[in-house]
Image (cartoon, rainbow, N blue to C red; front, side, top):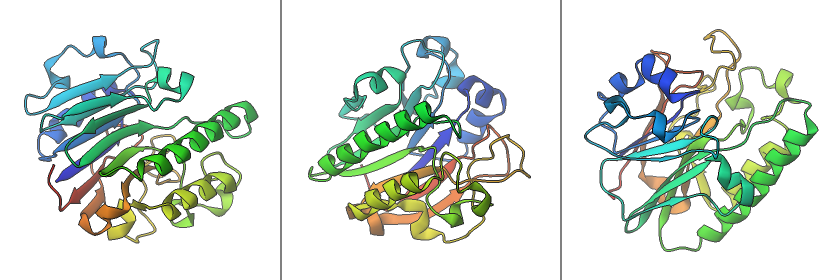
Length: 254
């Protein structure tokens, strides 16, 4: 089973840059897209609804920012939107496809400008709520794959210049500790199960390939899928947005 996760920085711009043409060649079972920056109503063209997929979208209340989508080759038993996090759910940040014993989710975490205490507090609030949610669902009789732009890097190997970035939002000590706690609670960074390379970055903040890279786009999986991870790569040959698609293969069936 192949899952592609991609933060689009605006799905219409990504489409113009060739994302959907590239996608036709990938034979993915699921495609999780974050940061649509438009409403589903704005995506009437056929390119946004490939025939081989069942497409599901979640907008923010204004339909202009955030937004997530999930493309499923196999029809899901149910689609869940939101996490029960009050106004965060109004921002189009989470959508989940449920199958018999597996859930595949698409998540866009809030971002914060470095030095903006209000934004950082809100981002940390989201992480706190999400951590509790991940603890809760761990007890369910199903496996989870949560794909997303988490707006943080876990460790120095995930940063091109980690020493210079220690005070930047996305690499603060409390953010890195949060990911440590999630992994200790029974989740796995799927990409790191198959790659220990220190030069694998999914995000270039200004879109320039020569700028400092971050790995902020993860597929976190429940512990029961740890040994099902077969392959992982961050696609870099073509640029569809400031983020590169994360491609993961799993030895599982829906």
